[in-house]
Amino acid sequence: KESNRDVLELNASDARSKKALAEALGDVTGSQVLRFEPAHPSDSKSNSNHKYKYKPPPPKRRCIIMDEVDGMGAGDRSGMAELLQMIKHSKVPIICICNDRSSQKVRSLAQYCLDLKFRRPTKTIIAKRAVEIGRMEGMRVEPNAAEAVAESCGNDIRQVLNCLQMWSCKKNDVGVGASTMTYKDLKDRQMEINKDEVLRVNIFDACKIIVEGCRGLAGADNKAVTGSLIKRTDAFFVDYMLMGLNVHQNYLKVSQGQFNDAKKKGDSDLEVRSLEQMHDATLAMSDFGVCEEQLRGGDQNWALLPLCSVLAVKVGHHAGGPNGGFLPGYPEFAGWLGKNSSRGKKMRLLQELRHHMNYRVSADAPELRMTYIPIIRQQFESLLFDKEGAKVKESIDLMDEYGLDRDDVFENLDEFLLASAKDVNRFGDLNSNVKAAVTRVYNQTAHTSQALVAEQGAGKGGRRKGGAASSVDIVEGGELDVVDDDKVAAVPDDDEGEDEDDLEELKSLFKKKGGKRNSAASKNGSGGGGGGKRAKK
Image 1 (tube, helix red, strand yellow):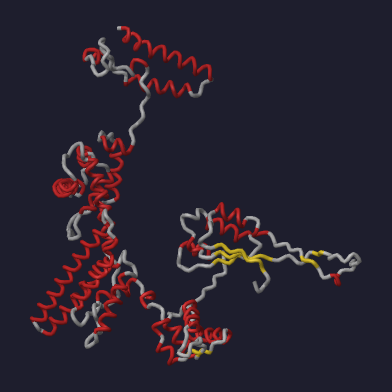
Image 2 (cartoon, rainbow, N blue to C red):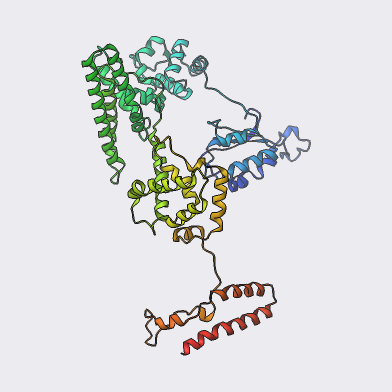
């Protein structure tokens, strides 16, 4: 605006798909703003009729601002690609603003932009600006008080301005607005205007606050103890969806530190007490799991969420002991998520194996995993890792016997090995020549497994013509479900003639229309005659 430009802004609340950008900014990127302003009468030469003379002023230039470009997600389909094309051909400056510079979308966009990075201002810079704003609003702010406000707000400029406004609106003892902010007065009223500290805590720091328990409260009064309890309870709500899993991942580290300290001191009573605290923390974690299951289960009783926060705090209280514990290092992220993903993958592979072996093996998924898969794996291992050379044909015969394909043997069976199995041959480590030989022979062999035929697709044979389609005839009584066995046995097998019919059908595609009709008529006459005769019989 200082450069006299017309600003057009699109943020995350606007539709920024390819179509929306083309409609909203298609003509804007190559045009200017036209203005028509009246000139003063004295500036006009023809002012005899006392009419204003209109003259076109210089055109006003535009500027486009794309805010939060890192938030252009699935809803803005192809919006980023359209924005890149606009930047390449635009005659109007386009300013793109993002919060996450490391996003993959921003990386592709930064190649076509001038990359300017802005850091959070320090408390000294914010304090100088706060003093200047206070002076403009008729309020005197001491520099040290302004720095204290900036530090308590986490260098958040908006919160600093809110604190100044709340301070000026607060009535003092005399009954007038407080127009002066001193460092002494700020310490007395800091809790009234201070930003909530838990809002500046990330999920890892919040987890550390919970699992370390009531640390630093030795000899504290009841008010401090209550404040610590409220602080740990609020830390659970920093991210209540993942906080329970993070506490479960890290609370045993605190208990282990307590036990190691007791073991170094050689105090057996202290060791037993630390083990009892670990036991109590585990029981509390179990209670948390039961409560969270009721919360996220079918009923979704979200009224239990405060109880979940208290149980999570209870876990840290028992793990840290009466004086609080210490979590060594940085808190780990929940490992249950990765384990659950691996479990889902293995369950999917197990269901695929069960589907392939279903016509040969009658077993559910657990029985198949514990009983059949280890034995089948040993059989393939003895065939493919034989000292005299891999027995390819025998391996494929075994695969066909149980309805397995190449991926089941070379990839899926290795997924069901335990982590402790170190001296076991893995099919993924087979020699590439052996794999190529198995693949070549497997592709040259016909496989009759119903599951494999359904998954890989069966060859589409030619349609049976006339009598071939009516290989099972209806008996004279007219019942559809009754079949005459004598007539079925008398029907000739026409599989050999299907290939010839398919060849004739393929040739007919390259003939003229009339030729097609004649060929089709001749085929229908020859193929349908037999069926007609049988029907007459």
